[in-house]
Length: 273
Ligand code: PAF
Image (cartoon, rainbow, N blue to C red; front, side, top):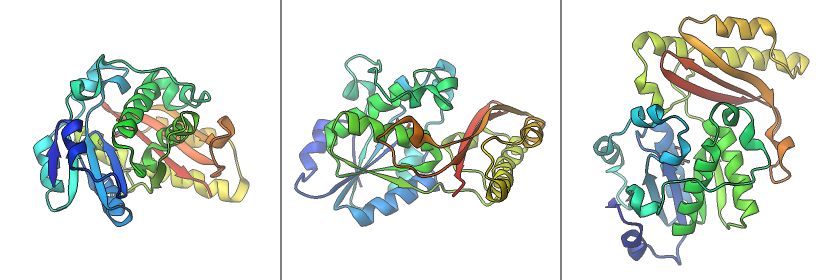
């Protein structure tokens, strides 16, 4: 692996006549990220893993401060991938001024995560657009755990006519069903056990949906989730994001959930197909 903190230096080593795959990350890598790297390695000649905690997508400065960072551990996890480029920029290498651009994202940035994290998706779109413009990847890999983010990126590239294939990759889960996330390591043992229950609530809804095609999560299930110790629910909804934008394919209804377990914010989603 070759590590670069300057995009200009990285570009000098990249052969643009070959297929380039990009995996944007904010570090604190886990098996979910590594599954993206594995897939990208199969589908591209060269791959770039970016590791950058992007300040403009944090609407809460304390969240940005406590976002887990450990570059040495990340590089250790990637070291057995011989032929990959790692991009670990400073703010300066990406931003002249650390602010978001404003995007028209067909209002998909105003619901679910957007409602609870105002400005978040402008920040995500800003950094992802920058990375696409710098590296011109053929393929870019994102996890379905952030399904709304994935949809926002699909809208952004269509609106800006950026030529890249967005590859969505299945959420990787812990044995108890909790979606892998860099934030999981902030939880205490007790909180971690509670967080493991969230997946069971989604599976329960999926079972009911199969039989009755509900569009609203039954109140008793919402109440049970709210009553979990240490769990503060933000949303638990069924939606089909394709109804917000003509740039999205209809992938059917999904469950979306966000809650705080202790001081850790957890988001997840599941297809109801
Ligand atoms: O999903 C993430 O880790 C981030 O939102 C991303 C796509 C790397 C942009 O900073």
